[in-house]
Image (cartoon, rainbow, N blue to C red):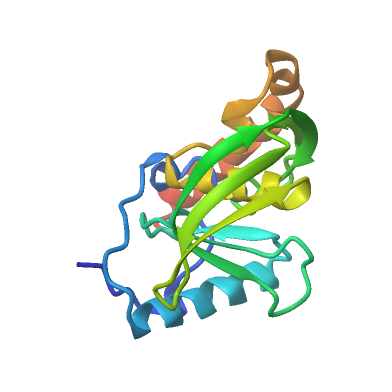
Length: 180
Ligand code: ZN
């Protein structure tokens, strides 16, 4: 049974919130709550000018992601219980994340992926993605397994962002101590 939080109160959580590290569980019920959740996630993603958002990023450890590689308002796609069936090629490209604000780094990903997922209608689809959409879905699906893009960096790339991560850790510490 899915938690039914107050959707108005949902917000994007930030590194190093432990919920970002927690693996998410499959969604077994497709109902109207899920539609409302998707709308709220899309709203948050667009407010923060993101290209994608995963359940754990709003503190809900369920296997749902939304993505909008074109960033055109309302043109997002929804994947429920997504699985990457096939990965091909390698490509390095820059990534950022709404949960790791202000941090950008080059990440090596598969160039093409085949993804299987359920749509909010309950229909199961299989599709191929290449380039930016492929990168986006790999990044979002990683969130469902508790992995952030900063966990996938080369040692050299990691050193470059070390101070920014420390800054976010201090900010998180401050906010936790102030009871917010
Ligand atoms: Zn992310």
